[in-house]
Amino acid sequence: MLLTYPLGGSFDTVVTFLSGHSGIVDEIAGAAEMPAWFGTSMQTLGLILLVVGAMAWAVSPSARTRERGFYLVSSGFVLAIVGYGFETFQELIQYVFTA
Image (cartoon, rainbow, N blue to C red; front, side, top):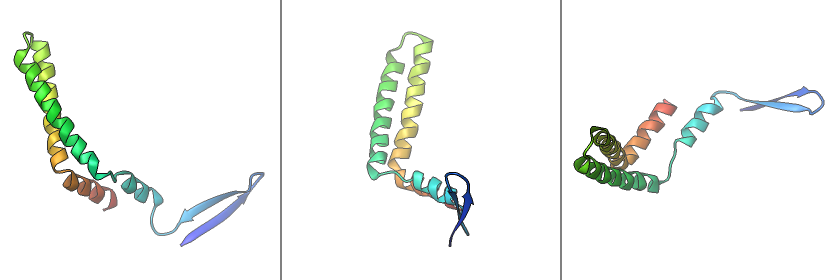
C-alpha cells in the first residue's frame, strides 16, 4: 500500500512511505544483482592474476617482490574460485540481503 503525505511549503514536497517492507532492502538486493558475464570475467581475471603472480614469485630475486607475487596469486585464487561458483555466490548475497 502506497501512502503519500503532503508536507506543504513553497515546493509542496510530498513524502512517500511504503507500508509493510522497507524500500532500502529491496534496493540493496537489486543492487547485488549482476549479469552472468561478470562471473566469467572474474574467473578469467582470477586465472590471469594467478599465472602472473606465480611467474612474479618464481623469478623474483628479492623477498619484497616475492611477497607481491604471493599477493597476486592469493587474489587470483580467490577471484577464480568466486568466478567459478558465481551463481552460488550471488544467491548467497541475495539470501543475506533479503532474509
